[in-house]
Length: 462
Image (tube, rainbow, N blue to C red; front, top):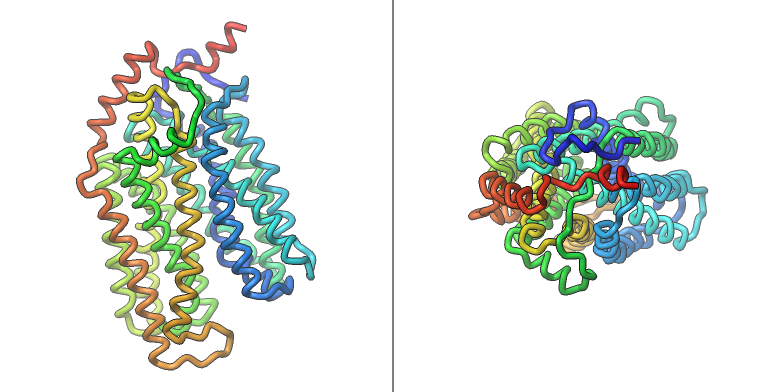
């Protein structure tokens, strides 16, 4: 298992084979993002036998409770120091913490009680938090340079997007019915989880960056992080850029069937196209960010995404190819929302370490994952509540009046466009660009004496 290299510096460019290996923990997280949010709730309501209200309450309540644990996990990670590294050990331990709940949720027997869903959902979200925080925090150490972070987080986004598309396509090719679809998705995730995590753990070096102040973390310390000027912008933007697409996803099938006139299977294929476009989008936008800067690229992506949603609403009903082109463009642009926000969060972590002498990267990412979980919970609660207000009937076979369909269209358009545009606007006047970050890195390197403390130096002394 690779630890670190005495001859390497934290500013070294990660070789492409190692970058590919490091990006692979994105496979289970990407697959779960598609399978769990779209298919699993319906599976428990239609096949397992729980009521729609119970399923909705379980997913929303557990996610809101789970987000309270992210800051604690982040603080503990930042204070971890083992022979295997700071984040590597957390990533490896996260594999069974995620894999066991995935098995229990996706292959649950018919008739399990409400408590079964709540308990295993909670453990599932705990497992995803550990893996996501460890992976993102490790990425900030693997890539210490401004532009290199766009490259690393772009690779992670590509891996996640490939898995999100594959987890929808593979079961469709081999499945027998909708029940086996969900079970095959579970097996797919169980296979890629250990592959992705072990690949990153064995082939990626890890360095433990130097801290100059190591006092105990308090809630005041947490507030200090969230009140950092650049971090305030990133947190608000991340909330908006998560809620907007989440709002759209929650209403996707309703809108594309009842408003756009597409059959269920066609709408599913368009969703796969939207997800698959993120592979190209993550690569292109990460490259563009090295030229324009991450915050400017994100502003362009958010503007284009909003305009695409508006254009989609004016297309003729059932017109497949124009709709496919718009969905491809939307997925292409949306891929930049997460990867650019995470890369900018790593930059802020460097600024905080320079001024405060504290390494708080996991805590910063915990703040982002907490915000994303709030947005994910609200995306279902808000949209379904507002749809009921406008008179839309979501039950299968229900007849909706033209007024209800018009209400559906307005809700689908106004929410995502408004939140995504607000998310992009958060970066107007953003100061932490590549020039400022280069100055921060030089100051850190000068203070540390060597760029980042190699883990191997401590091992060699033993």
